[in-house]
Length: 272
Ligand SMILES: [Zn+2]
Image 1: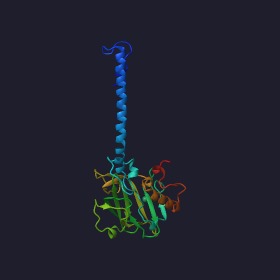
Image 2: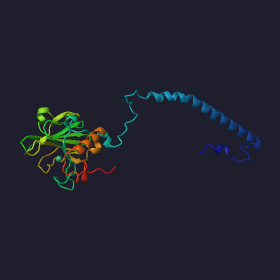
Image 3: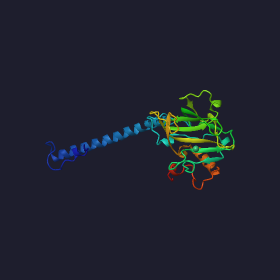
Image 4: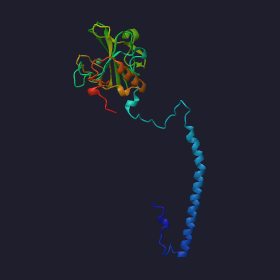
């Protein structure tokens, strides 16, 4: 529909039987009516506009609160939806790290599928690094010293974090599958390595998938979840990522020349 069409008739000829002069008079009248209508409309809009402003102001929340959005916005990416932290407190920063993707001690092409944090003493408690639900516990006996090692899987949405600790029953005597685990909860201690006093946790993060087929892994263990391992670095909160980068800079690791990053080779992050 074109609003101009009704007024855009030719000068010559009649307009519904009227003379040219009458037609011009009608046209003038119509134009006057249009102008009056436009003026009236703009006055109405001007009168309404100030009333609309306070309505918008009402949804502005006081500082520290958020309003309920009119719809549920989806997170821009899953990376932002995860607030991963390190599995130990600032009182027990590790002294050594074996990075992800190293292929000296782990078979290529993928190499090491997690990060090992290492300490020269036992007292570093391993804590829950991301709120989630207990997805599984597998127990094995350490070939180093006969300790029972618990592999704990914590599920958060599509993601999972896996911890290997000893002394789990000392901190959590009645841990049940499906319970909620929150950041900071102590799971246990790291496990012994070799004959020295050094201890470590093999710590993994990734996309977690329910093992519906219940097939055993290469060690013959049926896991409730299997992982597609990911470099955890970009899933950390900003402050924890900076903290980890500092730990890595200071950490003992003999092969930093070959594996200079926290995530190398197969797991290396694209250059920013
Ligand atoms: Zn490891």
